[in-house]
Length: 202
Image 1 (cartoon, rainbow, N blue to C red):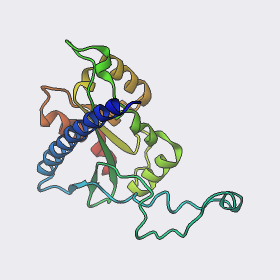
Image 2 (cartoon, rainbow, N blue to C red):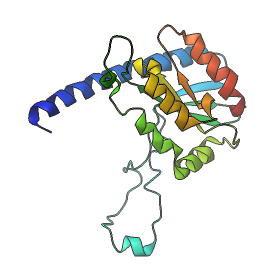
Image 3 (cartoon, one colour):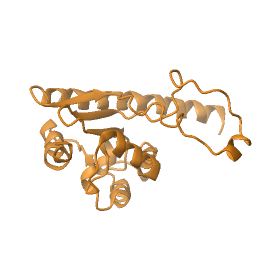
């Protein structure tokens, strides 16, 4: 990739990051207001999993083959950083969440407008190790739902390809993601949580 193309990519990534920050802030505000006077709280940028990978004990035969410097857990951040978490302060159950804002192919745009991989980065959440860790730390035992929630924003929520792709990934766990489409209200978002996810935190 040439210098000019890389510069354009940097600008696109910077713009995407700004939009994502706005999306996160909106969700934070919505749920902080929604939880006033309840036993629930919204945690911004939870650090429960920040050292998850640093604590992995590798077999000796692997240690012998890799670079293995001393690991200082207090200053090492080899883990996962969810965008938010919702905790029931009474049961201490936690649902970790991600916000994915991405462009998409909609009316008046070319199919290439659906570029971007924000949605693909959530696929790590489907790995057996992370699911076990999320369930253990969040205390969500039920197999009826996944131990995480993903909220999508932007044109991706109306993109015909991405909607099918994401629906396929989640399969029967369709309540573990929410397409917060243009024109939807804050109540649409909080109703989804209250109706489909909140019961698993009680």
